[in-house]
Amino acid sequence: MEIITICCNNSGASGVASDPLAQYCSGSIMRAELFQNKTGVHLPSPQYMHRGHLYLKVTKDYMQTAVDAFAILLKGNINDVLRLPAAYVLKSARTIAMMRIAKEKLVATWTVVKGNRHPIEITPRILEQYRPLFKYLNGNEIAKLNLTDERILTYIGTHADLDRHQVGIVASRYIKLNPRWMEPRYLNLMNNILCGVPMNFMRKQAENTYLQLTHEMFYHIKACDPLQRRFYYAMMTRTQALGKPYSWSARDVSRLGLLLTEIDGPDLAMVKPEAMSGITAQVMLEIPPQTLKHVTEMQLRFIAQKPLNILAKKLSDYQDELRIYNKGYCLMTLNTLLVVMIALNFVMK
Image 1: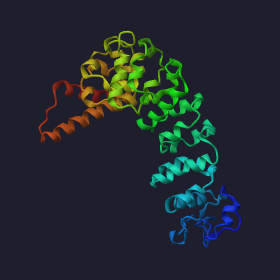
Image 2: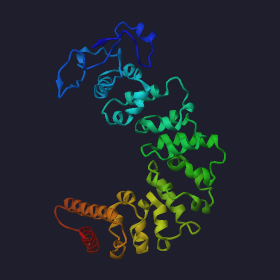
Image 3: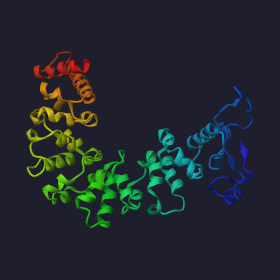
Image 4: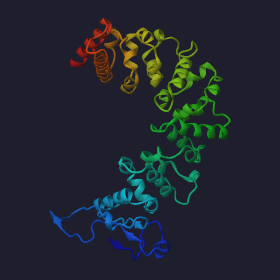
C-alpha cells in the first residue's frame, strides 16, 4: 500500500492531512513482474487495507485502477466509497451495478455523484450515465430531481427497474408541481410513473384521452401491479377507445403493449389473425401460458418469428409442468396439443 503524500481525488488535501492513516488502495505496490512486456494486475491484499481510510488513485493503467476501485467497493466501508471520484463512478456505473456488494454502498455512489449539489441541479446527461445504479435510489431522493424538465421526467418514466413505491412518490410530487398533469401531453411524458397515480384519478379521464396516448406508453408500465394493468386494459377496450378484441387491428394490438397480459383466453382467440402481428417478443414473454393455449392455428400464421418461438417454448414448458404435477399423466387438451404442434412446426420451418 502507498501512503498518501498528495491528495489527487475529490476529497481535498485538507481531508488527507487530518488523516494519518490515509492511503491509496493499490495492488501494484511491491509487484514488478511483466508478461509480454506488460505489468500484471493485482487485487490489493485485504490485510493491508485500512478500512475507512482508503483513496482511489486514477492512473493510466486502467485495468489496475478498475481492480483497485473494485477492492474499495468490496472490502472498504461507506466512508471509503464516498471518497471515490465522481467522474470515475459515472464511467464505471454499469460495472459497479453488476457487483454483488451491499446495497448501502451502491446507494452511497449517488452521494458521490451528487457532490455538494442539490438534486434539482443534476442534469439529464449525468442521470443517463448513472442509469444502471439509478434503481437503488429511494423515491424521496428521486422526487427531488427537477421534474419540470421533460427530459428528466421521461428518463424516470422509461426506467425499467423502478418499483411501484418509487414511482408512487414521484407521481405524488409531480401532481403537486403540475396542475395540468392530466392532459395527454404530460401523461405521455410520465409513462411508468402512471403506475404511481391512484386509479381514482385516472377514472376521471375522458375515454378519448386514452386514444391520445403514445404508442410506447404501455410498454413502460413495469411497476404496475396486475390490478392496475386490468384497470388500464378495461379503459383501453372501452367502446370510445379501442373497442372489443374482434375489432382490433395490428396497430391496436401493438398499442396495448403489456396490457395484453390481462386479456382472457377466449378474447385472445377472437382477435383477427392479421392483427396478431402486433404482438412483440417483450409482450409475449409476459402473457401467461394459460392464455396462450387459446391461440388458433390461423393466428399462428401471422405471429412474427421471435414471438412465435417464445410462444412454443412457453406452451411446451407449461405442459411439462402439468405432467409433473399430475404424476406423469398427460392432461393436455386436444386444442392445446394442436397449438403446440403447429407452433413447433412453424418454428422448425
